[in-house]
Length: 309
Image 1 (cartoon, rainbow, N blue to C red):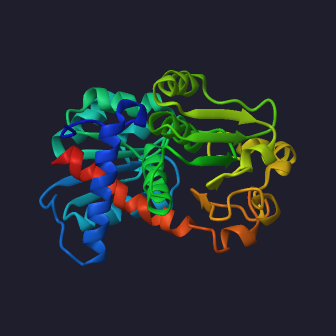
Image 2: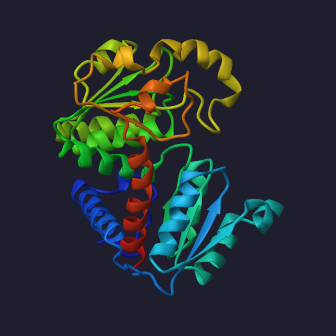
């Protein structure tokens, strides 16, 4: 079902396929907790090319690759011939001869799409400006662990309308849950993402709402999801303006009182206390942020095992 397939965006997969990935992730997580060996990729090699800074994505992928018994090769972009103008298609075809997969974190979706076009082995999207499918998969695993099922929950998202938000929108449209996105007027979602979500929601009954009313978005939510107001590569030059625009959309204990009493708080990190969230909510009893971060490793293991083996 998955062998040799690229993992470029969650839009490329059906609900049963994503559920299969999540089930595999749960099984691999259990093996790690029980200290059971699971070196399913022994003897394999994975190239890891990051053109953007990273903490969780790089560490989780390299740990996942090590647990699976494979060898990872971290490639700094400034050390590759790409930095001197070598065409992507030439670099891609060479990496394809050496390694069993490429994990890439980059800027435009077109860059990773071009690598995939010229490689036979799977290319795995570790983040682009358009989408963050690995984060989306980890988010779904976390919500499943705490809420039991996805199609009956309501998620309130407050933060930048960038790659993490896009992946969450795609997940909502596929799994059929309510996603209310609180943001200032004038900030809109990528058209390609919304067009996909609208079509899919007609089949699944998903409710995806963009609103400037934070209280409405939070009301009776099962999940409160905060994210930075200035995503890497998108809005760092607009920090002051965004700080003013998004200030009324901070998730904190007072705001959270309108959510369900057993809500969970999520954040993809890095998080900025005092901006998109208060310190008390990320450090509070409803926070599952660290479990969410850990689940990045387990879901990435599933993607690696299913696409490489």
